[in-house]
Image 1 (cartoon, helix red, strand yellow):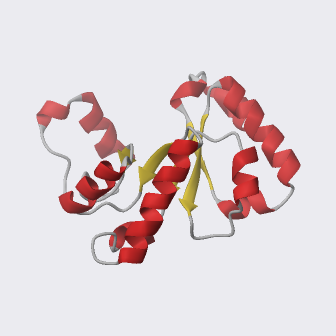
Image 2 (cartoon, one colour):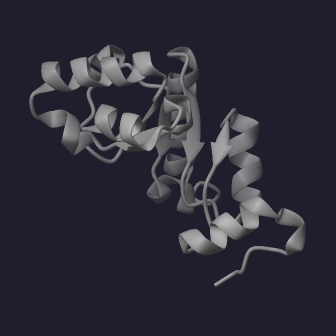
Image 3 (cartoon, one colour):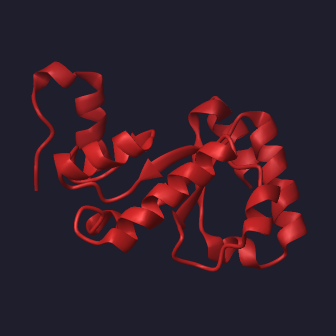
Length: 154
């Protein structure tokens, strides 16, 4: 279905990122890995979303053709105040780096959270610190002309 959509839309697969949840990976693992391999061979970026909150096994993780791990917002929220969340975030970053994967932190709301995670080696960040969720029209207008103004903060 994804390959057909790429062909019909005429997009470059390398510009597409699919975020997979651990629950999606729980069923029919071999078939899922094969499909992921096909998509990756086309250039599609594959990310494992909400890493650390589901039932991931490290043996599964090493078999998946991933590009990114995403640190769940639940760990990011208290990364500065809860030593356990800080330790888990550091461990996810270290694990991802060891596997040659990029790390994305979800739910970054403060500069202090971003700075802490960046210092640990996190590659990318998502959250209200940068922008709220936006209607596609608003995002598209901003991407066409960033100098026209800031994205609205909701």
